[in-house]
Length: 357
Ligand SMILES: Nc1ncnc2c1ncn2[C@@H]1O[C@H](COP(=O)(O)OP(=O)(O)OP(=O)(O)O)[C@@H](O)[C@H]1O
Ligand SMILES: [Mg+2]
Image (tube, rainbow, N blue to C red; front, side):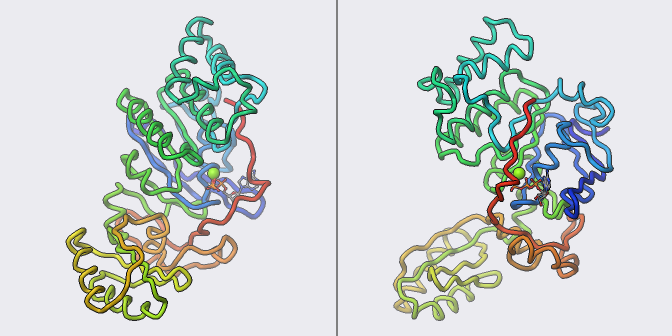
């Protein structure tokens, strides 16, 4: 039986751009799927197709068992959406925005008011609740938008980069809210650029790039393919980069990446803190002064390097990098031929406001 969110062969093109190039998804009820990918990968397009805001060129999709193309209105009644760009009414206060959403969903005025109050507390917006939301900071708007998506508790939720722009405390707070929702049976598709976030929240992860799923699996499976942890060292003296690299090569399980301008070297390792201590001793024995050293988890960039065989590239350069990496794709990969466009900045035209629910 297909899951609460199901898609098969979704294709969506915008002129020459194949924003979705045959995406398959299957999210079992009560679980979280993390859709992970760089700018322009197709994450928002996937969310918009699944939430009926866009019509795919081909493919099929069901949400909560309802056909997205045939019965969009029914789908809309079963889902909640928090878009990438906050869709709050700027002239209403935070409280009014939330009450309005409740009333749109046919809550009684009293109920809508109570729910608004609860959510304002929950998202640390109580102090600003009665100010027009146009006076809110970016992170406050983001939180108000998320709160709006949670006024009713639909069985299926979509959140497009919910924590982008949130400070660490609010990010943590949102993670807790999400975990509670899912414990209550909600199915969630969330997009993110942070492996750490997907790691924390998602049962399964799909890595997308150029409109295709290039890998899928649990976070442990993906991390294992990315080579687990990294040791990262910043040496004090540029003249020590070569020696330090040699030391790291001796301890590492792969290539040493060197960033000359920041004097930073990174190498995948296994062995955790014990190994880190050995690296420090060896660098010390060779008289290399260290500004910073630590163990860190793989980043999205690391996943990309391991999936595509080379570092993420700028958007246009990546498009033609066909054929190199397919052979390296592991058991969960669907296809592997693209380089990721890294952290290219959004263009203004891309910053389209999500339509209201
Ligand atoms: N309405 C549109 N018109 C033209 N091109 C579009 C439109 N929407 C998306 N695209 C293009 O489709 C591709 C996928 O965009 P999408 O917004 O889905 O990416 P994303 O993974 O959400 O990226 P980000 O991390 O920057 O939010 C991009 O190349 C984008 O420029
Ligand atoms: Mg997006």
